Length: 186
Image (cartoon, rainbow, N blue to C red):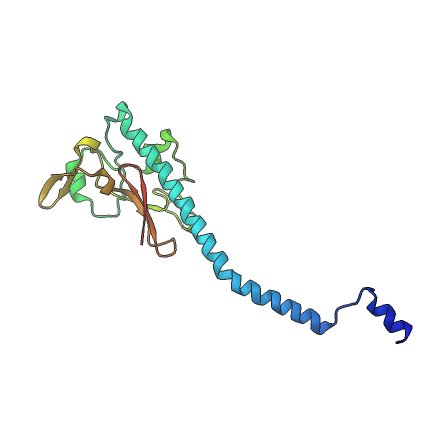
């Protein structure tokens, strides 16, 4: 072999050819396209976890509101006024309030009221739909008011305080219950 070729094989740096460079770029692009769905899924799961954490903090604030003697140990009168709440309004003397009006003294902020998956939260109620069921009720004496009358509820873990709008977390929603825990439902 001549000296020029021997020098090239002995570890001297060799420039990539255009074809080799294109092959490397194509392999990287294929790997990235395979990883994108997993990355997007991870991002959505992280947003769902953040939302669940927000709801837990809201639940703590609601329980603090209920424990406060100044509030008569009642649940806060929060519900979305766009829904049909005729029975609840008739049963309660309190007028509906917005979440920040009721819960700002207990640590609730606009940031807590906003789900990371919601691109357009409501300016008054945030990203969550508020249930009229507990409005103005005491925890030990919760009644549901229906067209057929009123009946008492014994299991606070089954009553909803608020929940996500739609199915923003990979087809699932987070639901805050009256006892302060958060469920994720399909």
